[in-house]
Amino acid sequence: MASLINKKNLQNLAELARLELQEREAKKILQDLQKILDHFNELAELDTSKVVAELPLDETRKIFRDDGERKETNIGQGKEAFPESEDGFLSIPPVFK
Image (cartoon, rainbow, N blue to C red; front, side):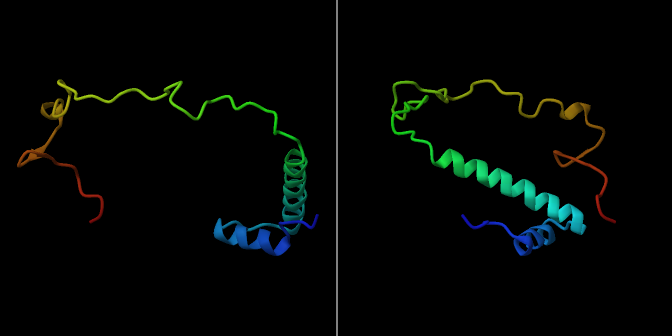
């Protein structure tokens, strides 16, 4: 199977990630990526038709909790400990001047 990633593709990815790759680094990365892709190709050849999924796709095992109305929350608590406030809002120093 032809390589899905080549030097040109790697250079494009490096530019997107704002990385400067040396020739030796690029060669090593290409080799590593090819090994990874070869491994996935091996896995794709395995017959998984008789493998049972671990998680059922129906409602037999619910993994999420039911959300309900919360009567008590801590919203608004701690404002009194904040150093400065203005018109009910917390005041912080400006980020940009």
